[in-house]
Image (cartoon, rainbow, N blue to C red; front, side):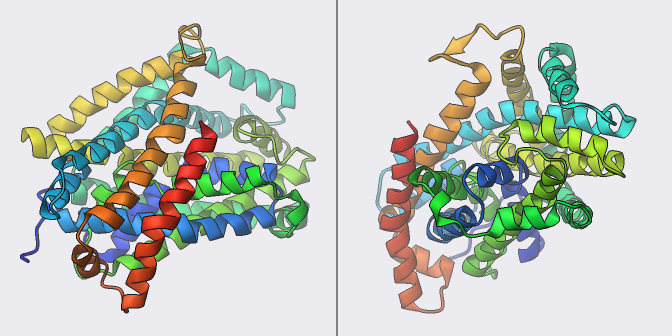
Length: 449
C-alpha cells in the first residue's frame, strides 16, 4: 500500500510526537487532580493500582488511537470513516470521531475558564497579593474571583487567544514550535518545585503519603477512580491522540512511543504530587482538600513560606503551561476536520472555532455568577459540561475506539502499523483492546452514570 500523507504536515521526529502527546496528556488532570485523588484514596496503594490501570487500559487504547490516525493520515472523523470503508464496514464509524471532536470543543469551553483562574493567580503571586494570606482570606479571594464575570471573561479571552494563535500557525510552525519550548520549560519548572519541596520539613511525610502501601485504605471506589483517571489522563476518547498520531513519522514504533508517553505522563503526575504534598504537610494542611487544594490551600502555604512568593509564582506558571499544551490539543482535531471538509484555510478555521469555544466559555464562567440559575439536569453549565464529557462522551468514545480497533479494522492494518516484534505481542494487544480495555472502561462508564 502506498503510504498516505497528511495535508497538515508531520512531526519532525518521534520525540517531538512524544513531547506533543505528553503535553496533551499533562494538564490540570496531572498536576491538580492526580495529587488530590491520591490524597483522597490513601496514597501508595492507589498509585500502584493506577499504574496497573495505565498498563491495561490507557496504553492499549492509546496505541489503537495512534495506529488509526497514522494509518489514515486524516482528522479523526475522516480517519475512522476511511478505515471502516477499507475494512468493509459502515462509514458511520466516522460519527465516533465526530463525538470525540465535540467532546474536545466542550471540554475546552470550561477548561479555558479554569486556565483563566490560573492566569489570575500567576499575576496575584507575582504581585505579592498572596503573601501571608490566611486560609479565610484565600477562600474569600477565590470566591470573589468566581463572582466577578468581568475578570473571568478577560482571562478566558486571553487564554483562548493564546491557544488560537498556536493552533492557527499549523503543525510545524505552531504546535511543534510551542511543544519544543513549553514542554522542556514544564519539566524544568516541575523539577525546580520538586527541589524546593525536598527542602521543606514536610518532604518525608509527603513521600510516605504518596508511596506507603496501605491496602486497608484501598476501596472499590478508589479502584474505579484509578481506572477512570488512567483513561482520562492520557487524553483518550476525544480524537486528540488520533489527530496527533496522523502527523507521526512512519518509521517510529507506535508501541515504544506510546509507552514513553505513558511513562512521562505518570512521572509528571508523581513528581507533581511530591512537589505539592510536602508543602501541604509543612503547613499542617489537609492533603485530601479536593479542588480547593490548588486555589486555596497552596496559596496559603506559599504565602507563609520562605521564598514562597517566587515558588508560588513558578507553580502557577507551571500549571498555566500544562493547561496551554493540553488546550492546544483539544482544538486540533476539529481544526483539522474543518480544513479537510470545507477546504478552509487553517487560520480561518481556527479563528471560527475559537469564536465558538469562546462563546461557550462565557456560559461556563457565567455558571458562577450571572448565569448561576441556569441549570441542566440540576447542574450549572460548567458542571453539566464537565459531567457530560468526563462521564459519558469520553468513556463512550474510548469503548467505541477499542471496538473499532479490535473488531472492525482489518487485523493486517493493525499488524502493519504497530509492527510489534512478535505475533504473541500482537495477539496480547488485540486481546486487551478487544476485551479487557472496553470492559474496564464500560464498568467505569456505567458506575459513574
